[in-house]
Length: 584
Ligand SMILES: Nc1nc2c(c(=O)[nH]1)N[C@H]1C(S)=C(S)[C@@H](COP(=O)(O)OP(=O)(O)OC[C@H]3O[C@@H](n4cnc5c(=O)[nH]c(N)nc54)[C@H](O)[C@@H]3O)O[C@H]1N2
Ligand SMILES: Nc1nc2c(c(=O)[nH]1)N[C@H]1C(S)=C(S)[C@@H](COP(=O)(O)OP(=O)(O)OC[C@H]3O[C@@H](n4cnc5c(=O)[nH]c(N)nc54)[C@H](O)[C@@H]3O)O[C@H]1N2
Ligand SMILES: [Mo]
Image 1 (spheres, rainbow, N blue to C red):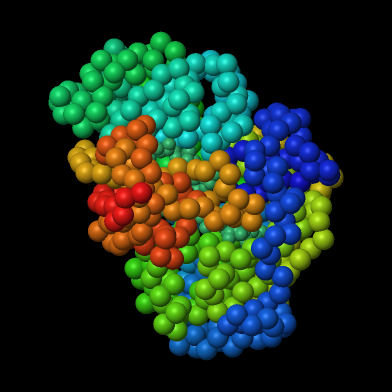
Image 2: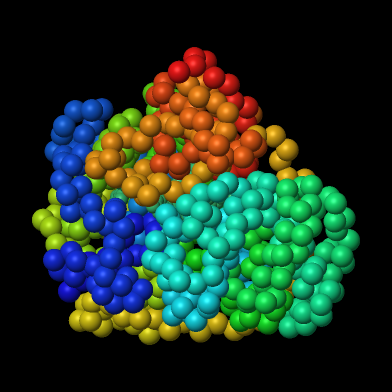
């Protein structure tokens, strides 16, 4: 019997029934601070009852309100209903399966682009799939390049596997990963494509690249680069750029590409080009980005989108801007006020009575706090589910270890369907059949998972690398840009229960005191702290900072600017101006 930490994290740790981390590779008997905090967090800040307009009501009453609203909006235009979910829990039943109801109803859907779609799509354009190295393959390398990833914080188990190995970091600031690496290359934000192209040029000029289809076109782009432009734009001397190429040639490192890279300026092209570097050297799948899309799990089957495709898609980058197109939003497993661009517009639409917002969450998230209806959800410690990892290849049958509070996502879906009077084969398929249908290509059944607790998948992929779409050479941002990274104590907006609401602190190398960050979309008030390690062109914040000093979401700074491959909002590299109000 095992429990999986179902949160949005590379590691997806697995615990025994006493909630001790398994000694099994790659969990290796330890968890991060969040994994260690989970049991005590489980009883704090919980949504315990249902609420309508801030008043406690019975679940039945809350559902009556939802049903009447949905019927009303659906009569006019079902696409004015929007379902919003993301990766608060990585359970197949918690996250994916409940979409069926909204797809059957003809509601609008998001594009699930928030975190990593940009990189997935760009790598898939070169390899057919974004599936890269597995943990078992990580340990075969004796060196690693952490490219745009604060791995020592965001990917603790992956980082630990390289403890005694040669580590190189490429980042726009000297973070923990960079400080603990053998070599560090400080690049200008959004210039990674040029760095990667320079390395490619060096390797191509030495005759590498023969196995990669379309390499002649890449040569034209790479050999056409002006060395002084590349050096100026990236902030790296030609010696440093050449040094990186030699590291690739001599050490043949694994390249770990951060999700953060897909959210940078021109990040899609950068991720694609970086992922190709090992292929130029003939290293088969010598990169890692995220393996979720190559496990063989049929997520579309779970969501029912093959049979009932969403009638309309509003990209996650665009929801704030297009909030006028929505009258009713149903949110679960996501905290949009924290995480979506332009989220202040979502809050305003609710406050103005233009948007009716329903949130199903175990905790009082920032979004639950402003919602019209709030419903209590069990945490992953309180319900069974099937969990996958985007790094290792174990599928886990999660067994509850605490008494259930609230209503599961699937029971809520069945009840709402029943009260709405909708019937559809997608809503009649049993949970077991839905899981087995989604796992068909993996050869694993729910029965086997239940019996064994966890089962290792062995996905196979054809390896035929190609250059794919040629990258666009655009100038990186020139001014100060905003950059985010993971906080060691929080996962996105989670863990305020243990550590409090993170202060809106922004690090720069010169400012101290309260002041504003201003972008072309909005303005937020923060506390500036001086940190000499931050380059003068960077404003750095933890991505768990949610709300500014005046109560405005930090994401008021963002608009619908997004990547061209997967539509991921560009959270890193937005040009901002900063100014201090009072000195302290
Ligand atoms: N502790 C903890 N772990 C987490 C999470 C968490 O919230 N807390 N979140 C999880 C989730 S949802 C995700 S997506 C992953 C994110 O994990 P990562 O991919 O590691 O992303 P970040 O931690 O956001 O930041 C990575 C680094 O990118 C750098 N960076 C920013 N812009 C650029 C650029 O233009 N070029 C280069 N080279 N570097 C740049 C930042 O300075 C930062 O050091 O981590 C997961 N793990
Ligand atoms: N400014 C800025 N914004 C960003 C980023 C950034 O770097 N900068 N990063 C982006 C990234 S990488 C990501 S992944 C997103 C993350 O954004 P979110 O998806 O909003 O992240 P989480 O805090 O993980 O929130 C998920 C919500 O799911 C709830 N939840 C957890 N378990 C369950 C469950 O079992 N059932 C239900 N119903 N709910 C559950 C949690 O309580 C929480 O309220 O934010 C993005 N937004
Ligand atoms: Mo993410």
